[in-house]
Length: 150
Image (cartoon, rainbow, N blue to C red; front, side, top):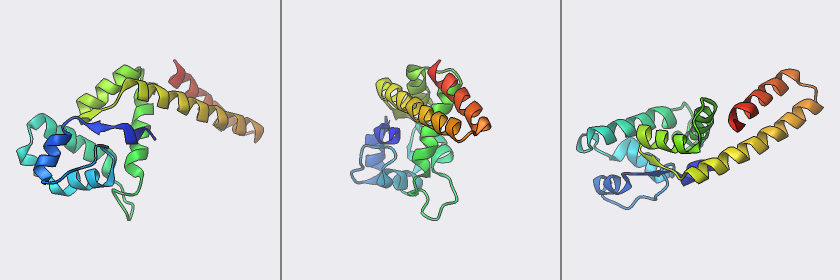
């Protein structure tokens, strides 16, 4: 999944504030727990603090019993990439947006690969929707494919 490839640009700063080594993936359980409970936000630069607060707000908040280790953050992140694409950003623009808003580093090529995989999944959903005569699902899926491929 695409979330495994996302890294915090300020990873070393978080390690220093936590006092121990953190995995590099932004959505790794230890990292998510650290930014939710171990980091003193007052020691961060205002820009970095805002990025982490936006990350927590947009990706780690849910009502699951195992939150934030329930898988919701990864699904929300994948959905965010698709939303940015459907709003007209290309893979480079998506990488820039994620870097600016959340302090996440992600290679544009990884985003492009994820989007291509998403279209393949949507095409499979489209085929199944057509076979099961679900017209509403066919229309929605065609729209998502069109917005993702443009």
